[in-house]
Length: 80
Image (cartoon, rainbow, N blue to C red):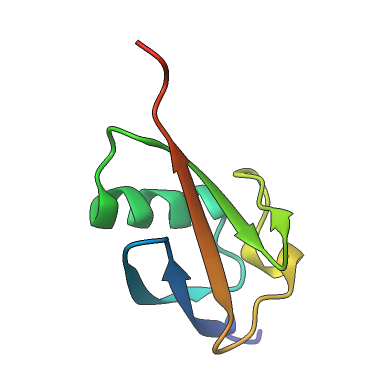
């Protein structure tokens, strides 16, 4: 059985960025947890790749991420 492919990509917001290595089979929700650990969990996030919003229940492989890809983080705060 083949080893799951690992991909190295950048996660970028308007103010910050970091690099991450994950398996293709990992879910977007796993990436969201990493984003929360880096940016804080008091905000709500959407992740986009190639202008497509990434869905939490999908595998990263669904979006055809490659080494060097850039995932954009867009966040918003709920109105009080």
